[in-house]
Image (cartoon, rainbow, N blue to C red; front, side):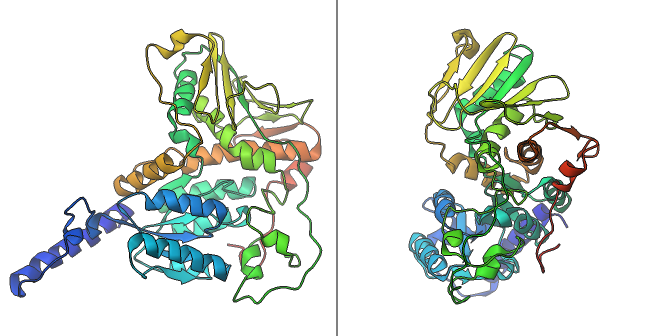
Length: 428
């Protein structure tokens, strides 16, 4: 049975049960919210969601979910007792109940058969594996980025989402903002002519092993579960800084590389959209000055560039073709080589990169079984480009990617960085 037909059958059963009960039971006062009256969404049409790792970024995402009238947040999991209790309080206050369940082990949350979807906002060391385990448990997935730790995991992640029929949305919310979408449309539809260069802002181009911080006394696992926090990552001694919100000790491939993979995954994702979500570049050079240049199979170049941007806010991208160019950033504004590129259209300016539209896109696709903007295939290609660029930075020399095998050509050192061992018991 497909996810869609399973959902329809369950809701049909609920409706049928109500109808049958009405025929034999005494009159019952049913709350208007249960019938979908007064603007309320009936239970049969609500999307029941659980959250895993709801810290600084996750609580922002949670707020975007709770803004949606058809969302019922039913459970939260976190390795930190204080944080999971805090988030439960936020959820219960919003829903006007005390029904939100709390878990320290995410597997217990995934075992619930009443959850339609999960929000994953843990540290990056967990994203890929946890999303795959959620998919195998029959849950749709909204996952923060970076979504994977290395090239090998990226490929398995994509294949798992496809095989399980999972609606997957990477947290690349700029795909659902009007000015970024319009800029990508200009590039995709040939309005800029033949595309020559697409530029992404990496917010730094360094790669190094994540290493250890000095050992400190570990807390009681009931309060802060250090072992579960590490998950599939290599073991290291406890340090409070590593456990702090926002530290994110592994950005990918066991390397820090935060600029290329963390911030770059937003900008590269938009560049990939501009080139019609084609496979990633095949050639990657190490940084030279403020640029790192990659080349697609068709000759177009993807350029990681740190400086020289028009001041349009964070996460800028620029697309250049033979007939024009466009540049956009988080201010909500664009600059075009010619006003004629607008073709009389007025593009809404929404600054500050809100995720509300991206969350709504995900929820709509959960209901329709459609493909959201930040789907698994799109996330795969953008992450492959970031991982490969990260490897070129780490090795300090050019690397070439064979798209047929997704391995590096005649490069043993680069291929060793395609994957990494997972710590027991998280190998699968």
